[in-house]
Image (cartoon, rainbow, N blue to C red):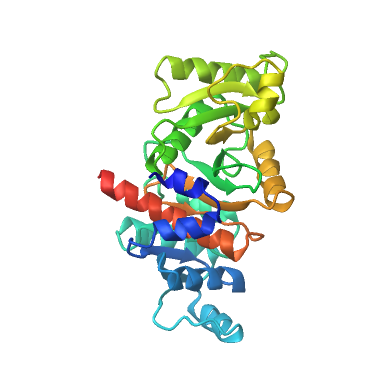
Amino acid sequence: MTVFSQISEAGSQLAHLKELCAHLPPLPTSVIFPCDETSLRSATDGAREGLIDPVLVGPSEMIQKLAHTHEIDIAGLRIVDAANAKASAAKGIELAHLGEVGAVMKGALHSDELMGAVVKRDVGLRTSKRISHVFMMRAPTYPKSLLITDAVVNIAPALEDKLHIAQNAIDLARALGIDLPRLAVLSAVETVNPKIPSTVDAAALCKMADRGQIRGGIIDGPLAFDNAISAEAARTKGIVSEVAGRPDILLVPDLAAGNMLVKELTFLGRAEVAGIVLGTSVPVILTSRADSLDSRISSCALAALLANQTAARA
């Protein structure tokens, strides 16, 4: 049984992710600038669940005072002192370069502060792949978890960028157990309209997949959200597709559209969410300040699974 088929069963995404990680050793993770209650508690909760082995990177005195104030037990956890958020990001990523950690987790610093350090040439976490982000979401009204990309890193991706974003997401889905993931390229409509550039990009991505420029998945688009998710909506519009009604991955036109979709599913649709940065040398857990503890723990579990799959392929 694949990872996704297990997660597709009734029950929470978090519970299934934790179950899938039960046989894995905790993933050494630099938690960068854990200088608010939520990020520090996320680190200790992840450790208690056996998902991560956190290394707290930040101002040592501040972290210890915060732990005391909020009665968070950090006894036994390693603290690497760093003066501020910028220094914490540099030091946390250095630990990944040295092989002392296998993942990086965002604490109480801005995403652009962390990602600025991640993308630095020579000292960052770049690989030959383009960096992108994937949310893994489980909505009560859809029978399986969905990967949504890219709602965090690439602001207005060009066609070539979308090619790499699609490939990253397909590779993740395959690492999580889907042999042939289905990817829907979203736009406002399901027909190609030169006045809507995302429809043209979608059609080009489909042809790129036909020609082997994107491998390992089935791609269709453009698809509007309704006929991407609902087989009935697709039939009503006469769409014949191997993807419509059953996608594993949704590729959004740009960051703004993806950000709104993810937050709508989270806050109105009560979807569970985990997130991970792809294309880096180690997984990057890029949490939001508004993320719940469950979401942060789910992201830790996703990072542990991805790191384990990567190690197994090495």
